[in-house]
Length: 189
View (cartoon, rainbow, N blue to C red):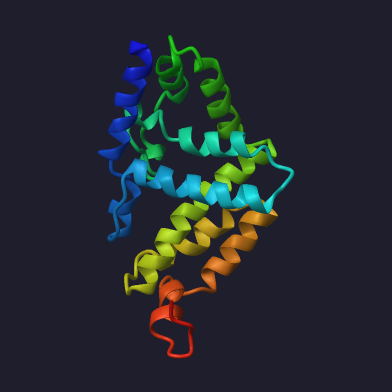
C-alpha cells in the first residue's frame, strides 16, 4: 500500500511543475497537471467520437502520459535539443513495486510508440490541448502563440483530431459564452 501512496505523492508534483514551453511563447502558463486534465478531457470526447477505440486505454494513456515528468521535469522542444532525459529509466523507477506497474509501463510505452489507434488519438489529444490554449491566448491578443498554432496543428495525425483542430481554429475561444450571454436572440435559462 505504501508504494501506491508514494505514487500519489509523486503525481502531486505535477500540480507544481510548470510546463516549460510557455517561457518560450512569451505568454501563458500551465502546470503539467493542468495539461493532463485537458488532454484527458479531450480524450474523453475523442473516445465518444470514435466508437471503435478502447476508451479506457485512451483515457489511461492520457492520464499517465506525463507522469514520468515528476522525475524528469518538463523538457520543451528547444531543451530536448540539448538535454536527454532517460524516460525509460523514469518509467521503470516509477512503476517498480506497484501491483499494476507493468500495465502502466505498457500504456506509457504504447503512447510513446504512437502506433495503435489509442496512442495516435492520445498523442493528438496532447497536441489539441496545447492548441486550445494557444488559440485562447491568440484570441485574447497575445501575439506569440499565433506563430505556433500551424506547427502544432500539423502534428495532428488522426481524422478525428484534424476535424477537432479545424473546428477549434474556426471558433473564437469565447464563443461558447458569448452566444448565450451577449447575443440578445439567444434563449436565456
